[in-house]
Picture 1: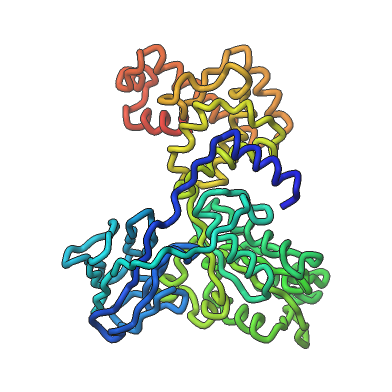
Picture 2: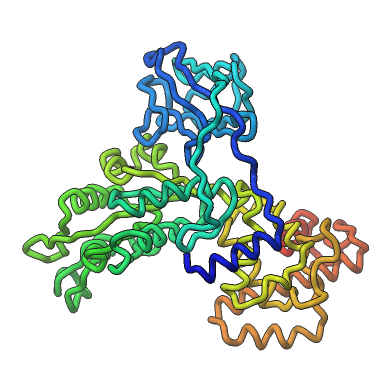
Length: 455
């Protein structure tokens, strides 16, 4: 990242007294003690940049041949002196010492049963070894948490290579930002970075958008047009939400990637292309393959390398750091963010992740709620927006006039609901039942409005 931006982030880390998650304190070894892969072992020592996946899939870190094991069966991650275990929605479930579990902490010595296999978790005496970046970001990615800094060394290696990459993660975790950062840090940085979102193009137009078309190829094709492969020639093609691509188009995409050529609709011959493919998905592609909704051969061709971005709620300390960074992006002084608000945000679940945090900041700044003296009253109420005086209504309307109609209307409605709920609760001394009756709605609906107004 640019040196001036790096200095700003470093300043934020000092100002916020950044306190990331501790590094793994111990090492473990997984040993298959029963099943088709008996004797196979895997070192779990904290060197892995993300959680360790166990299952049949080639994308798994510890791959088993047991047919009763799901493609992605279970995930393990060292946290402190323990191993955290997650069942990944497996077909046959996961048992620890004979007890079925969905999530839990292991200390070593336990036997984990998956499918027809048993794996013993052994505590090792060797000191943990791991590669942890000293940087507080990678390219345009910002994050100094242990969970993110464990990813950056892998990202550096992938940026220097040309292999296809699949980036996985929840909505809003920054998959496109990471993809562009990989491009910017690689040998193709001076060439195009082209984005194709599988969810935003009508199904009947996807093929033409991917591969292009000649004039007259179909009704409405009044001129020839290059597809995204040709547009990205020499650079990187980022295919977002690859898991949503129509099954009928997947073999054509596979052919284009394998042959490095595309055939525009209506064209008599193929066109050679040189692109690096980075794909992203919010879906579990292994489960999509198992369900027959995603081709296994395409998955193997794309998932040469895999990066799993952690959700914001798992990135200890990064909420405040990102909030400060995003304030500057939005043109505001992060020092004006009330500490009580930041404390509340650190404990929030953020289902929309970084995108939701950015929207929350934009909403607060746009509504004038973070000007001096208007922060939340206490940390216990830090997630609740501060009251806005009636005379600020005209200012709000003026701010909305420069926005697109749909966005302006939505913001005004959201602000009206927020103020209305706040007023009713204030009149009824915080009693939700009475406030709902005064508003003329059922209590459950009022609770929904209240929860929405606190976001």
